Amino acid sequence: MNRSRKIGNIGRYIFLSLAALVSIFPFIWMIIGSTNTASDITQGKLTFGTELLNNFRKLNEMVSLGTSLKNSAIIAIVSTLLLLLIASMAGYGFEIYRTKIKDKAYTLLLLTMMIPFAAIMIPLFRMFAEVKLIDSLLAVILPTIATPFMVFFFRQNTKSFSRELIQAARVDGLNEFQIFLYIYIPTMKSTYAAAGIIAFMTSWNNFLWPLIILQSEAKKTITLVISSLSSAYFPEYGVIMVAIVIATLPTILIFFLLQRYFVEGMLGSIK
Amino acid sequence: MPKHNTNKMQMQSNKEHDRLHKRYKSKLEKSSTGWNFAMFALVLSALFMIYPIISSLMLSTQSGKGVLYEFVGFGNIVRLVQDNNFWTALKNTSIYFVFQVPIMLTLALVIANMLNSKTLKGRGFFRTAIFLPCVTSLVAYSILFKSMFGADGIVNSTLMAVNIINEPIAWLRDPFWAKVTVIVAITWRWTGYNMIFYLAGLQNIDPYLYEAADIDGASKTRQFFHITVPLLKPIIVYTAIMSTIGTLQLFDEVVNLTSGGASTPSLNATMTLSQYIYDLSFKYVPNFGYAATVSLVVVVLIAILSLVQFKLAGDSNE
Image (spheres, rainbow over the protein chains, first blue to last red):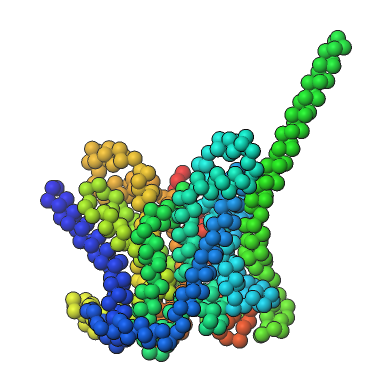
């Protein structure tokens, strides 16, 4: 009994180490790859090379890296800020000023979560074509700030927001919007952080909608640039790896610096 | 009844009326302030979710190329039934979720269960490592996998070095192995994600239950199936629904893993429904009407599968 437990215990470590190795390996692969040539990468070279600067230089020749990073950053930052404001206001409104009819509207809003993007992308494209917003960053941003999941996330978290605080603020003479602005937002900082991280990552990594709506090179995001580089007949993997490292760096940083909020934001849906 | 008494009653009822009126007024205020707060979100989702889905429904009754459309009623559905590409895309998508979702969720549950043990050393490291794939963009990791699964790539050479295979596998070009590669890739990206949900759920299970089971002499395996799994069921159902919805919308991975250049398999081998909808709308001569019809199939599938999973969860709870 004791012996088989011991074997089971060792098996557990072997299994978890293997899982951890498989999980981390592509990251190591990407970093090593960024220092190697394309042919070294396709042949599975596992040691660092000397091509990093060369790859970086080639990347800058092939695409306008700065522009695409700037586009990605603008889209991600603007849509995160707008989404946070709009979703938190709605979550607050639905929870604090609860009425029967509002609950019905809220349920309807949640139902739209089930709508797959594939089912609305064609009408969305046609809408933006009609108002001549194709190939604009605004067109990328607008549909993403209507995210019912975020409203849900904020409403769930608002349930624990103290009603006495609201009453006290009313006595102090604050109006309803001031209460939201000066009391609610500072109190809910960690909820905002969690939601913000998820929103930022989703936007930064978004592919299908930008692919449809952005057409000129000058408007492309870093994700689109990476994808188009890799669809070449002979993909320049060394160059692509450099681009992937650059595009993944912000998200890895956010993850390690704000891991607690990251997990909180993810789990928000099952609270 | 003395007169002054009636007066008093009258007054009282006036007061009551005032009070009710005030309450009504404050309720009205409460109601309109709430609507003001929710307005932006409601308007935006009406504009960018509800209007498009209604528009999709209407589009699905039309057909045409480019800008000329005509009403065809159920014509698109008739075309759908006879469209081999559609059935292939549907079959591929189903293969992905029928195999990938259970494999991934089982893995996630087993790992979470191991990580939940108090005696395990290095829990933090294992948890972070296994969760890390979640930070990559779908496009980036698909390309990483594409570069590893080439004909003479690192995966083949490793598998040959440890004698698991004798000759290289055409991971990306062979229709069967291309699907396997997609499944492996998605599992890599999302297992840690689901694991986090299970870990959170496991923390809510009373440790006393396991102690009691230990005293009763129940093995760890029995405890897993008779305590852990039933108590995690709501979360398991939730992750199953979310994963199913995700797999039904698969696009980024398939496009970036198996398209482009020398490694392209016969296009249909990995094509998903979302990809087919995209191709119909933006790659071939656009036929938005027919593409909308295909997209509604995804909506219906998601609705049905979610209902089935909710039902399953409800039934065995009783």
